[in-house]
Amino acid sequence: MSKKYRKKPVVIEAIQWTSDNLSEIDKFTKGKVKNHESVLIIPTLEGEMYASLNDYIIKGVNGEFYPCKPDIFDKTYEEVTE
Image 1 (cartoon, rainbow, N blue to C red):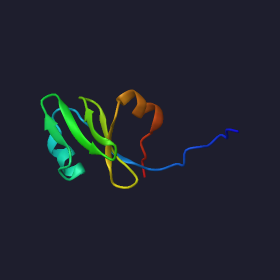
Image 2 (cartoon, rainbow, N blue to C red; image 1 turned 45 degrees about the vertical axis):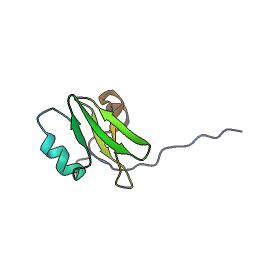
Image 3 (cartoon, one colour; image 1 turned 180 degrees about the horizontal axis):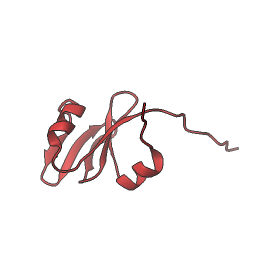
């Protein structure tokens, strides 16, 4: 029998790749993300993943990084202002 579950509210850190902020991404990821032509190569827990321009780079709850497409990011997250 299946059950329903609610995702726990978690505040995440993220940065959007805008093509002119590679130094900020490098600082945010502590040099873990590599720039290769028109994509960023991100080592994740599942292996290398690629981020395209305007994708978000998200820092996970265990300090790992992964890419997220802007439309999914907008549906899943909202900015925290504290």
